[in-house]
Length: 384
Image 1 (tube, one colour):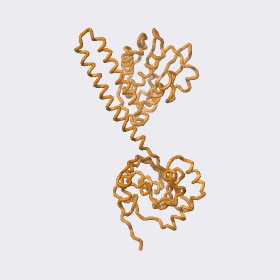
Image 2 (tube, rainbow, N blue to C red):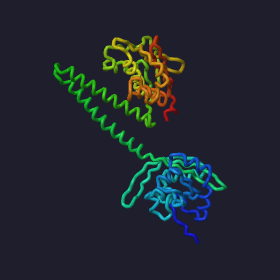
Image 3 (tube, rainbow, N blue to C red):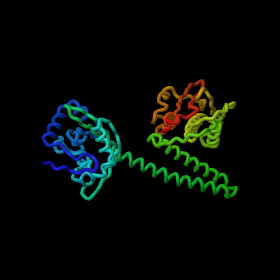
Image 4 (cartoon, rainbow, N blue to C red):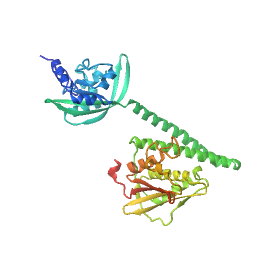
């Protein structure tokens, strides 16, 4: 009588060798195999007992194998030497730790006829050493010749996870340092002799701008990684514009230029994230000032149209015709290499997080005007 192996989560039973060979033979020469061999992910096909019956070319290359004969019948955790798969008689999926494994959950859902994706943290044991991996795993159900299978795809996210962790540490530490420098400059400013007042003001100004630039980069990275939270409040659009104008009135890019606020602004309350809105408008104003010659003007204002508030920032310069179609692309800039995140970040924040839109018109005769349209009442479900 076949021994029944114990399990703390997924079934421990395995298919007989003759059945495994029969199932593996089904996929030889199958058109599905040709398709899976052309993708860059690591892909395997598992039977209803979560055993490997096929591995794509990319996975075999990683394992330095010509074909999958050596790994037929293994489970994913056993193939990659997961420390928990090797610790129990039932193998991969049967230990108490497997309850929290994204890979096992994905496979079980696919066997239940649901395509699922998740993240899996794998601790691989190699002799006395361990290696940790962060993986994205996707499981899709497949039915072939009356049997149920799972197409199981793996993408290594370890480098991306480490990069994000290092970014968070970097921004935390550098903001503490830059913020401390700004606070020290503020304290010195109150006590410094009059003959050193101008130099101390410059120190405070530059340290404040440094903090602002670091914050802008942190917000952009969080937005790209879908990690940015939205904090909505009732704000006065005119107050927001005045704050942005004051921010750049003494900025070096605004030296010798005027920032004019349109008069006759109607009174309205806007429900949005004021911090993100100020960042969007500040980027527009900075871009406009950089494009404006000394002695020129930049105009800003807003209007209410139905249930929308439209902010605008105008400058007298025209965007080159050949650059207009690419103005919101991530790495594009009219200012040279390495400067292509300003307008991209404006579009990203306004569209994905403030649930609005950004557009512009530009000509030699009329100059350039960017418009940010936002709903007066923020859609709460959009922030989730």
